[in-house]
Length: 340
Length: 163
Image 1 (cartoon, rainbow over the protein chains, first blue to last red):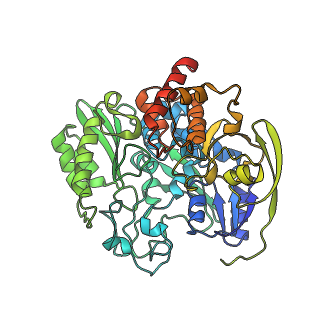
Image 2 (cartoon, each protein chain N blue to C red):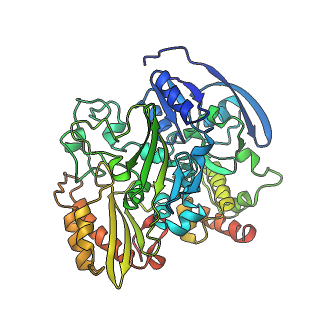
Image 3 (tube, helix red, strand yellow):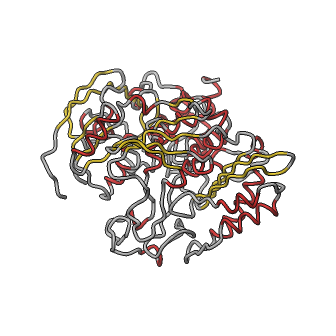
């Protein structure tokens, strides 16, 4: 572990100026992943730029188009328990509460949740080769312990998964990430924020150097009538997903008018397949149709020695979660376990 | 590790269990180490030091957090409650009495974190059902296996003092 300097940014312009000026500096939000990675000798900042004093980043406010703006520094627990999130975006609430522990959710922030890195064992072991940590050194996970790893969208260079639960709902809800940087502000659709590993697994997302997330914006539609989050993992709580599914349905005359389905735990980014959602349009919300959608979502999946089980498991989870979404009042459980 | 310049010390004020403490610290000192090594408040325990066990749980500005994943300098001006600020030997907190009555610990190492976490949960008021309480306390591991008795103790205090 290395020592570092500590600065506090007064506002977003100041934060962007500081990250450009201070050599080898990083933004500090809740710190629950950054400080842990620093302790594991995975990141070695010379300066941390704390965003805690930037009041506007802590806000949760309604937007003009009927949506909700989640400040990048608003806490995960504060977001999950916000009255408007509970009422209009219960899918987001359930994914947040299925992640980490209560203590971590109190400290962790919305922007930080997007920026957390994989929990791949080889990435965390700084003695191991890892193309994400040390580009070109190799990926031991492909032939090693790969139970937590990707079964779709991976490359020969990296089979890591993105670990977030919250991001699975944000992908399903068509959220938009607002960022600011030296070259101005821009908006990134959520499904384009994280990227697949390809030839450059050291890059988790499409942020440009020195850019700062200011908020995550939710559109007006929150699927509060028909939604479900299902998380399958090795123990009941406080564990990362083997497979998770976030589903939002808009139903009309017992048919699906719109289906948004995002899958976690199986890829380097939240996994959404437009073709499957198009297939479900105007279909009945039943097991057979969800099963066909699941086949489309998992098309091209390829497992490894210890995780091939995830492919049939994901398909079953997509079906189960689709059915759970028909009756969220009865099916949603603390920790997002399967309905009874 | 390559360091580009000499690192600085920072003036940090923490209000710990109601007492204002002024510290001068390098940035890399965790809140946990500041409490234990700089303020001699050793009730808060270091288990994994990686946010996985919950032994270092304290209440910061009314919310339970993990002091091992928190930089002390980042909490300048904050109010911290540690186990030393939860009841006393002469006048234990209802949670402390309930832990004794329900045999909710064996080695006791996780207990300060368990009690701070339970106190945080009760004051948040979000967890209501038994399933929610278990989920809400799942960030605190007890390797002696006293979890069932811990849940009994916390559930009793919730029923008697928080409803």
